[in-house]
Length: 116
Length: 110
Image 1 (cartoon, rainbow over the protein chains, first blue to last red):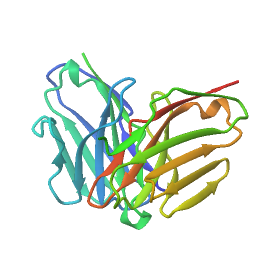
Image 2: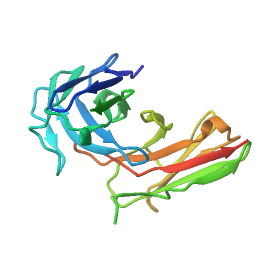
Image 3: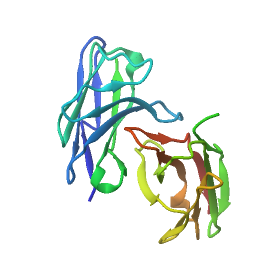
Image 4: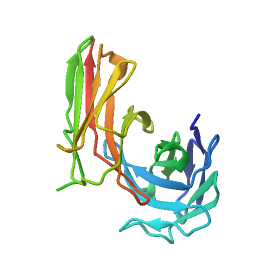
């Protein structure tokens, strides 16, 4: 149980284009979802937190107009990187938490984004 | 002071030894505590959760929690090279966020 899927697992896009990443909780309802970014050999960096049906809460320094988050249902959240630039190349990881699972947080497998 | 402190390592142990990973935290109202394992290039994987003082064992893993001293530890018995990874300590204090430590890198030498 407690499986989180993420799609795509990797994507290459051209500078200036937009990329959408999907995150799904497969066997539980995710009351809260999180989006992280991780650069090589660095720590996880929380980008934003979202609750189903509510606007996402972005961490300081994260541009909400560039990283669009939609938590459309209790099992689906999407992150859209708009007007991507090479510096947006990173490992993006979603995570989901269920109150029914005593606040345990489960991670998706991640999406490696390369912007050329 | 960081909310969750971990020694970044690397911690190097020989195969078959006990690896001891430690974590201290600053928020006394912390309720739930977690250990994650992250292999290089992969996302974190939840391996242990602990909610009350004492020890909790799961296979070769034992989590220890001491709320009075504000520390949580993870022991890995009979360490294997496949245990080589970064181990993240995390805690939930209420609200929406879970706070993660920066992680301790563990190397198990064959």
